[in-house]
Length: 231
Image 1 (tube, rainbow, N blue to C red):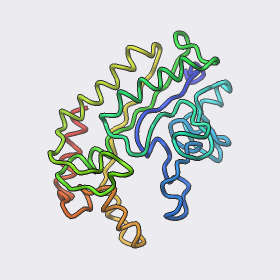
Image 2: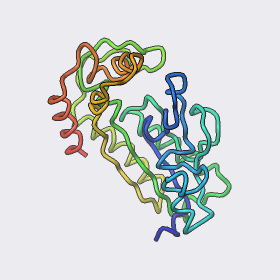
Image 3: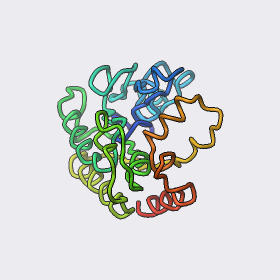
Image 4: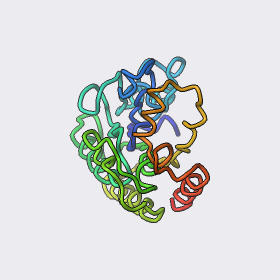
């Protein structure tokens, strides 16, 4: 029952971290608005900020693990949201370990007895940066953007995700894990009237879709489907 959920938590990438969720310009596009993250956001209530925790609060006001406000991954009340903007599937296991450690250190949480809902959404950066061969150009911000010499296979992606899920299974009893398939990274290309800076940013942030070595929409959709099937 919804009222049985005592702890909400999340692993993943920028979508889970709420990156740019309330942004009104390029200057705040990289800011993380964890308070409105669909997975752990605890700002206001469900009437104004529709998130899973705000819905659960209607049944159990004592839900813990919610995130609030905005900021980077290293400051602000992020709760049990350990997602990071540039994470890919290889980071999932370390995120799971971080989450378990964080719950163990929380005085309000009962690791053994509390029911937990853990949202896992990963794969956007895998599709954008690891599904093709490219030179990369954001190495100073994101190691995964330093280039890619060999496309990651769907099997490798699934194996990385499995390592993270296995870590959760071993370390978090009484947990419900919601594994969400990675969304279509080519949708950004349908926004034809984006400002110039957004066009340039997408070439850097998603080279496999919009970079000079992109693999094309049809190939990307095929790769995405392979990722989905592998999970």
